[in-house]
Image (cartoon, rainbow, N blue to C red; front, side):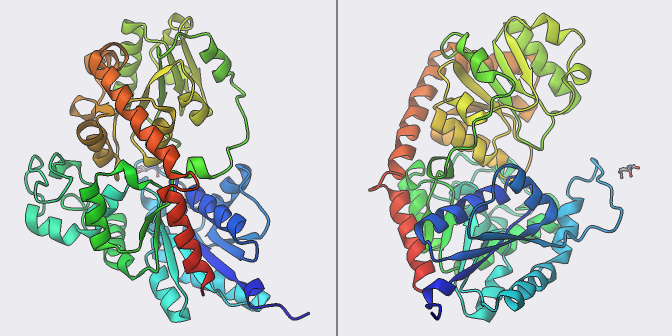
Length: 451
Ligand SMILES: *[C@@H]1O[C@H](CO)[C@@H](O)[C@H](O)[C@H]1NC(C)=O
């Protein structure tokens, strides 16, 4: 029997293989595959990032993983002093590395791609889709507010000047009156404007309006109507379809370090859960300051720690705090944030972490590092009222004690908890059958299936 046209739908998926980018993209693809059983996917990503997705159980039917070249020179050794080097090498290898891998797949299967889905960072997929006369659907994996900044970079440069005063605020931008120049991602209006990632983000802002639809891992109701209106004026096909944590199957249950059992024995809303994501390590003086703050305030804590805690934490700290503290190399973050014992999340302010904290209803203390994290921190504190930044964006012992006290013991902390409970409810409503994210996902599916 000849294959029908629909059974030949074949989507190329182009990943950005750094940070926590590839996992939400795969989650998006899996959801599409569940909604349209006749679609096949070819997932293009570096071997290293593909391997990580596999080891986290990312494999499923109808998606085939293909490796693209990483662009790294032979024998390349990662150097902590140059964390962005692999990104720069990868960007230099694009788009040729993707083009070559895609040509091989088309030659082998005899089926052309009917649609391109990519991380929004892979801006050149716009041209690849245009050449093939198929739709392009990029996925933005962070908050809408940071995307607005990239869409309006030229405007911001003109209004605020390049390397102008950091304290000036974006009063002219609806919904951004409390945001300062210094809160914007580095390379937007200050810092290294001509490096790989800032140039990439500028391009993303210029090219996204060409997309058939732009999907995003967020939900409309988190933003004020003026931000959503501004967004629609810049990107009419912008579609919040998240939070993905609520729309994808839960990760396999794994609590090999007994975090949940430990939380069971704690008082309600008493514990500080600490994690700075899978990539960031606090600088040594800040590690010491945070540890000293926990010890001085006797705050119960659960710390998901990158590195070697025995070597990096103050001598004797683990022993002295063993009655009320637990340090583990890995933790089931969402489950922890949903546990009633957890009262505060100490975080770097990455978007996935913020969404999980909202789903858990836990206010945050944020110590941002790079990218959108400063903007997220400022937004948590001044727009949503669901968290605090640390003074000077660096942990000091006194600053950390003060922040823990505000969230765990004060009226202000209680108000934050109430506000985040409202956002939590809105997030759950958005993914219900009549919710905004569900409706937006249907629109994405229409774009995919009408081609
Ligand atoms: C890492 O980079 C720093 C700074 O450029 C340099 O001094 C150091 O030698 C490099 N380390 C290695 C192992 O190449």
